[in-house]
Amino acid sequence: MDGCVAPIITAAPAIIRERGQREVFCGLTGIVWLHRRIQDAFFLVVGSRTCAHLIQSAAGVMIFAEPRFATAIIEERDLAGRADLDDELDRVVGQLLARRPDIKLLFLVGSCPSEVIKFDLSRAAARLDSRANGSVRILSYSGSGIETTFTEGEDACLTALVPSLAASDQAQLVVVGALADAVEDQFQRLFVEIGLDRVAFLPARRAGAMPQIGRGTKFILAQPFLAATARALEERGAARIDAPFPLGIEGTSLWFEAAASAFGIGPDVVAQAIAVPAKRGREAVAKVAAALVGKSVFFFPDSQLEIPLARFLARECGMRLTEVGTPFLHRDLMARELSLLPPATQLAEGQDVERQLDRCEAAKPDLVVCGLGLANPLEAMGIATKWSIELVFTPTQGFEQAADLANLFARPLGRRAMVKV
Ligand code: SF4
Image 1 (tube, helix red, strand yellow):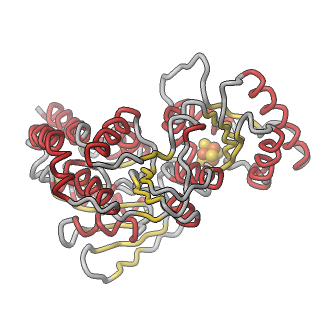
Image 2 (cartoon, protein in one colour):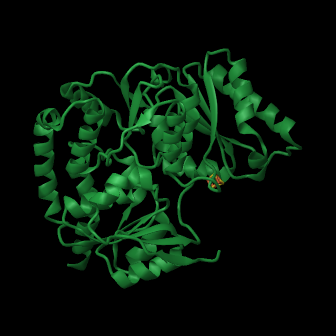
Image 3 (cartoon, helix red, strand yellow):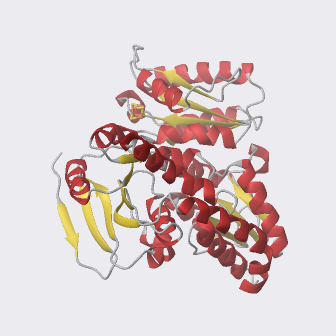
């Protein structure tokens, strides 16, 4: 693919825009954390053996007696057209639901094979859903590598969920983005301390507990890669609360402040409610940050978490940002984060992997955050790497997790230092 680099002259931060070869996982990867989050959901990938292999290996060594994802492999069947795939899906879904009455939410997940791309999966899902008579909700979205990068899979999944949410105009806060259960529990407790007791989470842990949505809903994103979900919620009448993301002590504090302020609760109340965990978290981060301060970091575009992570590493851990790449820059969702980055931070949107590797080599950073495919060549060049996928799989949001987050960056630097000794 041809690459083109077009430096855009803007006020700081500086930005490079690129459209070239990318090294990013597809949206199917999101199934690995989404299936853990929604405990009575099932993800049926309509795809190829490659897709089956990808989610199996991304899920690592987890062997479940009753897994909550599977792949209906269609590539090797002699499918003459839509009718065949309809029949095939009916059969697979029928068997699955008969065997697993515990499934309350079934996602049919589209992928790359041309038979699947030509097939109208949303119509098939609607047909199967109406046939299920409310015993199970059946929805669809695409996790295809042609249409999605790896965190866009969650965005597509939640966007598909939004039209199925019941309507309510009651005043409430909805936290949007899959969080680990422990993080949700901590956030829920702090919201109660702050005085917000009507707080719901999307996605919820169970299909039957998904929030209702309407004009009284104000929502706050817990993950930065949910632009389409945010738009879908706004179309249902909900209003987005502008905030940085809850990564690190500063990000988490400002995130709570923004949520409280949207309901007329002032920063003093928030400061008092979060004082103890924020102090504990700050002290824990400071211990880890000793290994990070003064070190340089380079981000390849991958998860869309890059900008909030860069802000955390620069402001709370004293790291130097060489280049912060992100696959997409949603300026409205990122406005608060961008304002917190050190002036003149070099941003890059999109990717042309060869050019970016050249810039990385020239910058000689101490640490590179990148996808799995780039880690080995960079390590061979003597650069410590952090796999960005780990940053999505690991609970990192909130006060209690901030030191763990810093540690995810300190560990590869420590390993590299030991290799050099
Ligand atoms: S890129 Fe396409 S074919 Fe490959 S695993 Fe993802 S959805 Fe399947």
